[in-house]
Image (tube, rainbow, N blue to C red; front, side):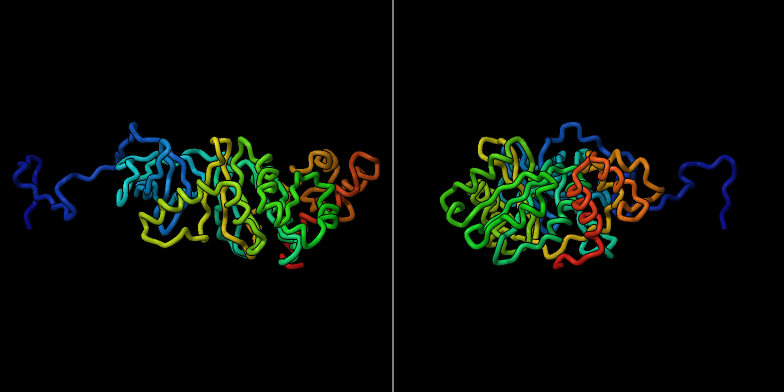
Length: 336
């Protein structure tokens, strides 16, 4: 076996060839200072449709991002072919810092978090008053997720021609949630869309709801032209006949005054990722009363200081009931 001394010649050293090419490997990544800014509109089987300078561009995630995934609503930086032409593909090289993240899990025992949308400001919870019947526990879970993510909730009740909204409004009255009541006739005439649109200006609003409540129909009424244009581009690239409802889809309101994000119908809204102690932050009138609570108080036990706080007149008893109902929602099934 040959041994090298102190004075070896370069010709004496054998180098192992790089099977992937002759270019030496490096850990230095390009900075992509000329990358264009964009927004993720939808994700479909690893391909991301982004809005770049008014054009819809199909892109894929760069390898250097590792396991970090871009989701609907993300602000991203792209390089490559940004023309938006058919069969072209750009590359996402950076994902911007998120201002908010709305998450859910499949159930309360599932540790895997699913990001519904990033950078949203508002969560519109759509529920039918009949056909299907309202599911208050699902609404509660969506409210907890909204409060945890720092989103403003908006309750949209559809099909008021089949049942009155009084009972549901009474249930959530203490939470002081903005709400809109619509009927099928109003939706067809456009009046309902106008009343909902009045709550959307200048915001990114994610729409969630159980299948069959009329969520996507409402979104179509809010942005019909934009949905047709955006989904048409997706179809041209992927070859699919229509936009799939298994992925969220961001659509701009007319005049660029806000965004709506249509999400797939949900059967459940798991909260395994949420620390119940953070829910109290959504109740500023009750939060000061927790200073006298025992350590790790669940706010639903005999020694909870909130009972005395409410009894002294600092807050409405209905607010405390609503808080405890939301905190207990993880222990119930959505169909209760």
